[in-house]
Image (tube, rainbow, N blue to C red; front, side):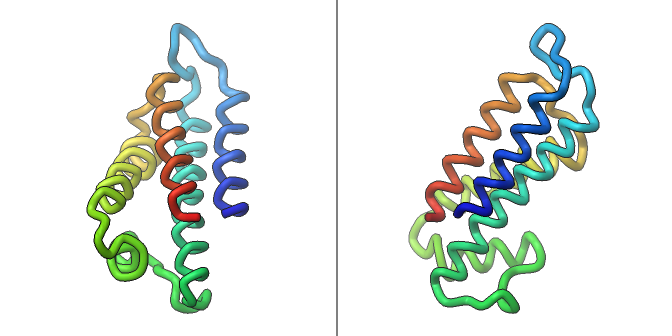
Length: 124
């Protein structure tokens, strides 16, 4: 979990250096970078949890679909809520935040990072 939190802290550090005007980040490129790093934090948390369950590095997922399958099989066997949280984080952090660059409101970004941290803590 340390590594996942390190990634998340790195993402927050990126945000600290971006100018804010009227509640929005003024430079979208580093915001997208921060979202990408936060998404990697979520994946690192899942990797850590999978390795605690006995998987070796070679067996870790390599795609979002493989992460979904691994979560269902090893972590969220009877926990649909955890799967929904992963899907929300995938859509928010990776797709809307990083890939499309649609999120730049400070409050929305903070809420997304808070949700990522909560998910990471559940992986421990």
